[in-house]
Length: 262
Image 1 (spheres, rainbow, N blue to C red):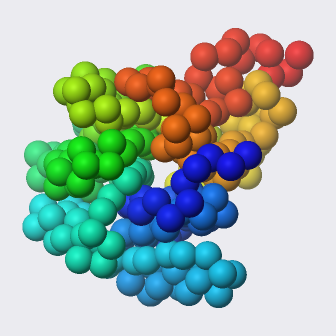
Image 2: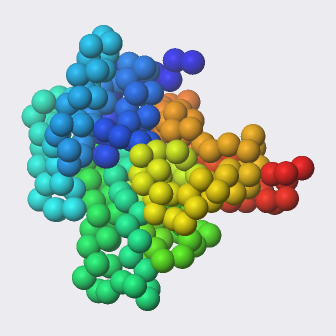
Image 3: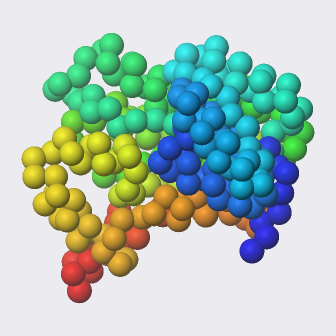
């Protein structure tokens, strides 16, 4: 399906690895100009080069997004290069295990900077250009805000904020024709997920337990499946969809877990 994204400038934070990489690849396949924004210049440029070598268009911006000034500078760099922005995908973040019992004020606030505040700042600085293009925003969020996980208070709070901001921005930006939606991720195999699972006791056994509880297909969600939904939400094919929290999770959050083994 042609989603009509050809030559549209779409920013993807945390776009060099994991789910972000999947999003960048799908957008590039759709002919968009995917702008990879993240802290690792090496990873950013490697993916940009790979996409360009395949004949598609990409750009990268190195930015530590937990530093507010870097968010503004990232937007300025994109505007200097292209003069426009048609879409923003807020994706960067990490489940950093800052719990209630094990955490403290400093770590909690650091986690919010790493996982929530740049969602606001990137949207804030991109907004003047999204108003011109009537572009769209997609926020990547996590099931932790709805289900809890244990020992991850800060990350859960950040994702609760992402969900709330999605609904709030959808209301505030109606008058500009800017649509805002979120995708809620549950169990998707990424380098970050692999690192987390390896911190657990008997990681392979735990991974199998999780997979068995995913109702649709008893498998983890592939990053490209999340990316396909992102591309759809950025496109005019979803022109009357806004303020939605869409679960791309094989039914993990809402379906009866007994179905997984039915």
